[in-house]
Amino acid sequence: MKLTVKNSLPMTLIVTLVLMSACGKKENKVNSSTGNGISSSTPIFQGSNGTTVYSQYQSVRNSVACLSGRSRLVNDASFYITAQSGSITGTTVGGQWYPGVIPNGTASTMYVGVSAYRDLMFLTKVTSGSQVVGYNVILSFCDVPNAYVNYPALVSNDRALINFNAPSGITINTAVSCGYGLIAAALNTVIVSQRSATNPYTSDYPVYTSFTRPNCQ
Image 1: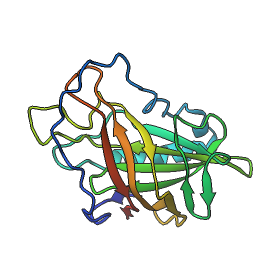
Image 2: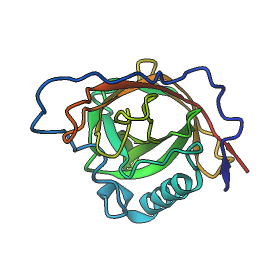
Image 3: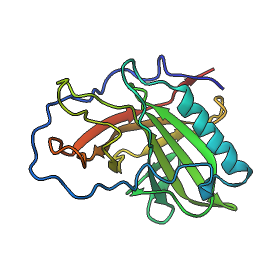
């Protein structure tokens, strides 16, 4: 299925581009655990269902271009929630998200959401037999330049994306007219673009984003 985002979401939430102020000494470490571990060899993408989900993820990611002048980040950020630690009720998934990928089980179903800026959210249900182990969320962001051209970008490849939170939960639509499930709403999610390890003139920057279902044909 070909995915389009022409009419996917009104421009109701705009990331405010602000000048980054100097923030003192350079940190020695940056949490780079997010964005790693997503590949065809990831355990949850094994088996026929897992392989299908991974192929869908790759296909959608490659087919949705960022807005003109922006590029998709090389690494996607991944977080997970388990059936024990999360709040999974009906069609809404919520709770505290942890960095990384669920190590056991198989990705059995994928749900896709898109933002006004062509950022992508992939929610994958992970099961073991008939039991739901939990959910992974994979976030594929486009870079965000600074409003001041001579200053560092607010979201870029040298800034890890950490501390994802979806305060209103992620509501899914199980219809598979696109060949996969859809994210009906993930409103006012926030993720932190961590200060750069190589540029002392950056500081942590919260990125607020809403996702909704894409159009596909």
